[in-house]
Image (cartoon, rainbow, N blue to C red; front, side, top):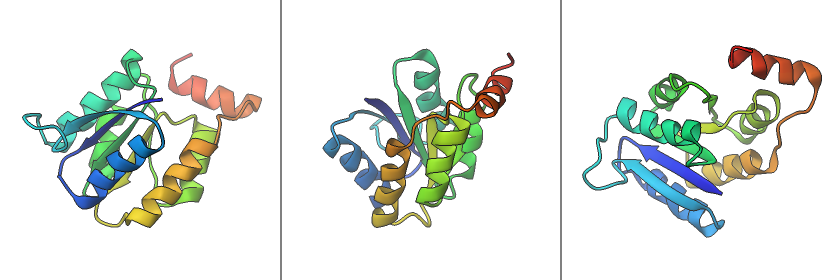
Length: 144
């Protein structure tokens, strides 16, 4: 899977995220503080990663900032992106399952490496619900 990753800070958790995704066999493209010379501001790098998802050059993205809130807001400004700020595995599972989220937002402040791995496990294990009501809600977000 092609995954765009952005972070506004070069933090240990952000570096561990990139390494973990690569160890799982994903092709990772970095943005922000993880990419030398790139704009590290959360609004710019989160948008850049989200745009790759919307354009189809990335299958999913993980966007990070100190709390994860700004990164999720910036990503959700991109049409076609459904970013979810996840602080635990249950939320990540639900975001993928019920909301068909295609961008995971993480907070660098409170996400430990073990917690990040649990969130990724749940995120990648879940599949979008085929339930009619769930699909209608996702389609409503897309303006259909």
